[in-house]
Length: 164
Image 1 (tube, rainbow, N blue to C red):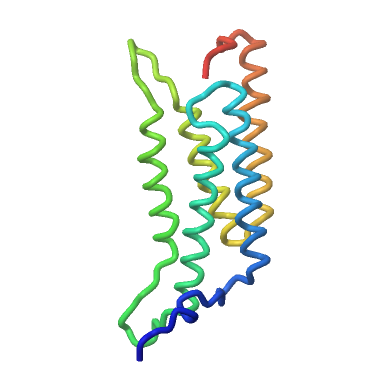
Image 2: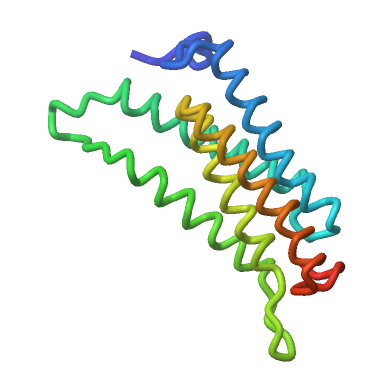
């Protein structure tokens, strides 16, 4: 039986629409905070990049939850392994993060920015799966590592003020 256009745009998800909106906006905000710190430091992957990474991770999470709920795995035709979600997002972010890492004249630049992109993906996955406490703690800890430890390194003379 052909599917109608109305059926195509059926809004039924495993996650209620208001929770979906909360997760999407929440991931954008939390990852935006990570990106904001990178933006202040004038790094290549700033607020928009980190927000988009978090948004993508939320989408992948919700799609995975939806698939796990709606696909019949009892028939043996389909098998679901939710850990593949983490693997896929990690592989994609590794590809993006590798693009910001540069090795020139014996100096490596971009590692912290790449790591912050990876953190944003993890935060987005956590929010997308509804693990808010982990996402919030990871965001706060990430900002402390990025901002406060930079201040400590500069004060101690370990790093140049303009270093990544």
